[in-house]
Image (cartoon, rainbow, N blue to C red; front, side):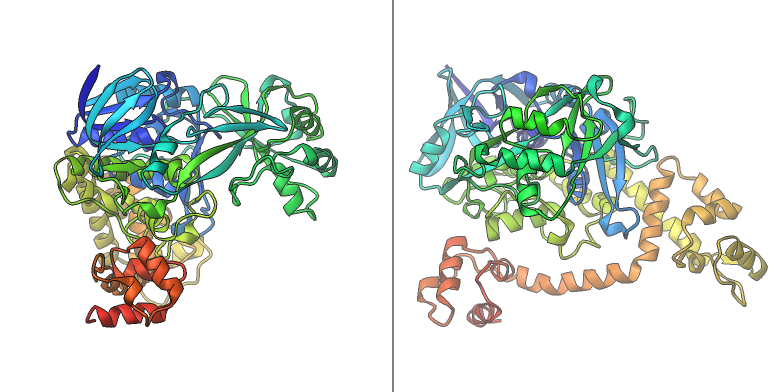
Length: 624
């Protein structure tokens, strides 16, 4: 049998779902191929979305018209805004999700998206003609013709699971791996390697003594992921629990190291430095007498818990014995052990910033196939790959994001320019313009771009325009409204702030670090009247205004720096140089520039091994 689509997306994980929805919502006839329709959007590891820098990515996906933020808000059983003791550039939303509801909400979203169909099958081969992808072939013998293909295979490409010395093939535990695609891509000239990730035991909550642990409640204020949803969280909210390993735990874990595939040579692939297994922690941080663990609920009403911080590939009996030395888990029973998994990935320097491959036209990679880790990084890539797969169908110019307009732009630039030497995880420290890339202003940065593309719909764009108008009206009111001397000093004394000698504008009160806009709203009826005129999202609008006022100088300075560096981003050099012939730059720079073939001088300047002196030579040769 043969079928015809504009776009085929392979894999229904976090990258594949966003890619399929983006392409379909833009108008492309799209097919999403998955091995199991009951595992769409499966949370393979922890039951959480967001976190430091990752939460910013989810807000950006939502601002672009993606789905992860909406699905997470509907599935959340705990929400927290991390790092609120720091500046707003560091604030990061994070939610625990009901794993089953997360899948159900994703499946419902995909099933009800126009132009999008699902097919349960395994893709075993690409159809490639004259360097252009033309579709896929499946294990059931179907030929599905398409103008563009997006591969989002996650950990399934030649997946191999390890529990101690036990090995078996699989893409996730109890799920088959995917074969043949890696071999075909290697034949087509792609460079591939292996990565490793892992996951902890899952614990039966009925057997946990929570009295020996510290409770960590969530927050129930206005913060959430989606800029669209104003309704309260629909699910019951649940706490997480904190406990610690100890020296007895560590002694038991050390006893199992000879059987650990990480240390006996069984696993030779690249593991994550920033999310290490518990056995790696006790070796790397041998001086630590304890490590913090988080017991996280996996559902609204169930008893399954995820032990965050205890990823392991040690033998089951070692995991079980060590677990029983941890406070609160002395009698714990488990649903399944932790395990490690090895899988194939492809060097992401083989991609353009659009996530289209350089070797095969109209073929896109997104997610862990590019060497990343995390649902959020996958979803961000999937959104961009889906947009560009749609644009490829009509021969339009590809859509890309930059380092100063999004964390997604930082992520993709890092991947395509620097490659990866370990599973890539996003951090705020990777972004040089993080004061511009706050979680609160993702809609300000990206929604208009998405609206022009057609991905963000009119209702979302109108909400943005309304928000900007109310925010600016509020800033204007604060800037022009005078507070009389007596009233100002009474207010300042209430908040332990130094008094003044004359009346001042309301904005001058807000500029004091100890004063927040909510203090002003509670004390000044005129301001309260202005805020009450907002039809909805009062807290979101007032927070946006406060951040712009308090951080105005920092924002302007960082924007000026970004604008200066845009000069290098606007100097296009792709295809202009034969790097082998430029003897005035270093040998390493020639090799790296030839391999990456950067689009601009700016991208060239970020390639490891390309020195400032090499960039100066390129600027001279460019006539700049």
